[in-house]
Image 1 (tube, rainbow, N blue to C red):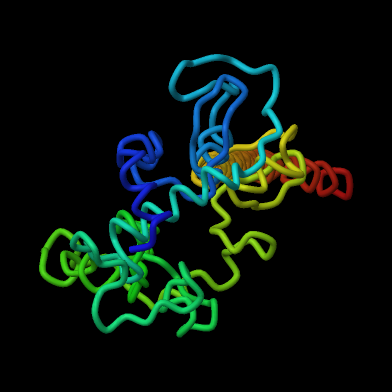
Image 2 (spheres, helix red, strand yellow):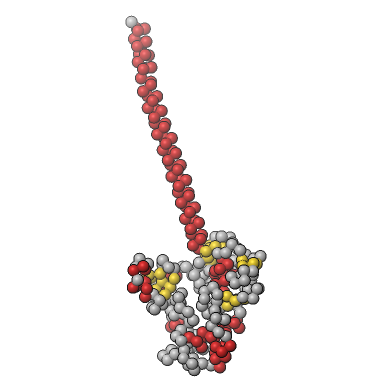
Length: 270
C-alpha cells in the first residue's frame, strides 16, 4: 500500500465515498450545484426517468439539468480507496498489503482483467468495491454477473427460466459508442436510445425516459391500434352481413313482380 492510498483510507470512510443511488463506491463522481456527490451514470439515469430535475438527497429542484463534470480529484480519491481497501482484484486487502498475491498491478490502478480482455470486458453489476468481470448476462434481469453472483441463476428454481448468454454478445449493439455504457435511456426529442452519461451531455435539455417506460408506452399504443383495427373489421363484417340480408330480401321480393308481369303479358296475347 502506497502512502497516498494509506492516507486516503485513513481520511475517508467507505460511507463518505459511497454513492447514495447505487450504494457502491463512487465511479466518476460529479457534484450537483447543491453540493451532493453521485456517480456520473447514476445521477444521469436518475434524472433521465424523473419528471422533474431534483437532487435525490436534499430534493432541491433545478429548472433544467445542470451541466456536470467529473470531479477528477474526488474520483482519484475514490479509486485510491478502492485499491487500498479491495486491491486490484477486488478482494479485501490485509493491512500493509496493496496488491493480493498472484495479481500483477500493471500501471498502478489498472485492473488486470481489463488488460487481459483488451478493454472489452463487461463488469459484474452486483460486485461492490472493485468490479469482477462478468461471465454471464441475464436477459430477464438485464444484468451481468461474475462467476460468484451468477450461481443463484444455476441453483435456484426461481431463475430456471431466465436465459443466460455471453456478456459481450448480450451487450453487442446495446451499448453507447461514445461512453461504452448500456443504452438504457430513450430520448424522445431525438427518438433514439442513449446512455445515462449522454443524458448529462448533448441530451441535457432533452425529454428523456427509461427504455422500459418507452417500451411499455409503445406496447400500449400498439395494443390500442390493434384493437381499433379489430373494431373496424368487426364493423365492416357487420355492415357486409346487413347488406347480404337486404340483398336476399330484394331477390325474394322480386319474384312475385316477375310472375305478375309474365301473367299480364300472357293475358294480353290471349
